[in-house]
Length: 131
Image (cartoon, rainbow, N blue to C red):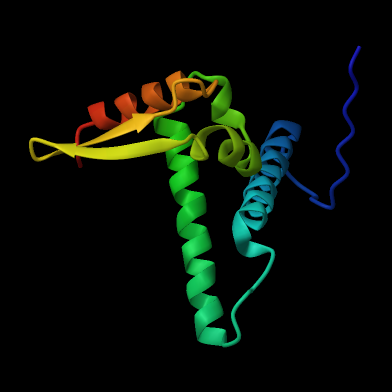
């Protein structure tokens, strides 16, 4: 048996509605924690305007990671990875660019354990129709 306790100050609504409201709040808090892991925990610059730009860049990075996980890593274990694990396993795969016959080619490290996962994600994103 599994028992769940929900303490709230809401005076109306069905239990299922309250549970959905609380779960959505937990998802929002997860995104905030992920943004802090991405760089929002520190404001490294001296002026307010520069730190505002820093916050915009961090939020852009968080959005790009969320969309990459949703579209490219759908149906894989990497769909639920935190930013630190994504950075360590996917974003830090060594690569080398080369140019031949007016084409730019990226050669990824063959020995990295998650290279096939990255190639699969890039293939999925490339197959999407532009809006």
